[in-house]
Structure formats: C-alpha cells, structure tokens
Length: 119
Image (cartoon, rainbow, N blue to C red):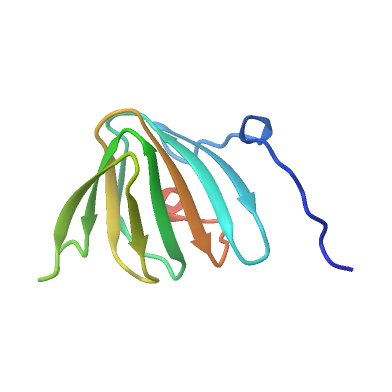
C-alpha cells in the first residue's frame, strides 16, 4: 500500500541537538529529507562532505560557508535570508553562523546522519 499524505507542523516535531549551538527538526521521507535548523551565533560545523545532494535555504540570519576548503577551488561565501546554496554530492563544505540563523536543509537521498552528526 502507498504511503498516505501527512500534514506536519514544525513546532510539533521533536527537536534534536547533535552539536552545541544547533537545534534541528526533521521530516524524513523515502526519497528526501527536510530539516529546519536553528543555529546560534558561533556555531561551527567543520568542513565535511557526504554522498547526499543538499540545498541550504537561509530563512533568516547570516552564515559563512567554506566550499572546497584546501583545494585550488576553495571559496568562502556569506549567505543571508533569501539565498540558497546548492551542494552537489561529495562537495566539501563547512559553515559558521554569524548571527542567529534559521536554515531549511533539503537532502536527497535522506540520511539519518549529516555533517553535524559526524562532527
């Protein structure tokens, strides 16, 4: 039987705190995972990569990203509300919250572990 449509509310979902200065709520489907992530100023996730494709949608605040750290293609970008960072599979990246920041993360395929879970 096919899965049934569901309506979920972010505030009703459980919160997990895989690292200091981060709170995350997730909806995990069979082909995609979406997470609402709140970052406190000073949150840092070191450079990492994963086989998932990821979309980082900044809803509020500002966060600094390092992309391809330690390679000739290294670059640093600061994203603010309204911007989206597309990370292809295996793209090295890290993040530092510059102020209180809310991000909507979309992963495909879903994964119980992400960069913040391994840090």
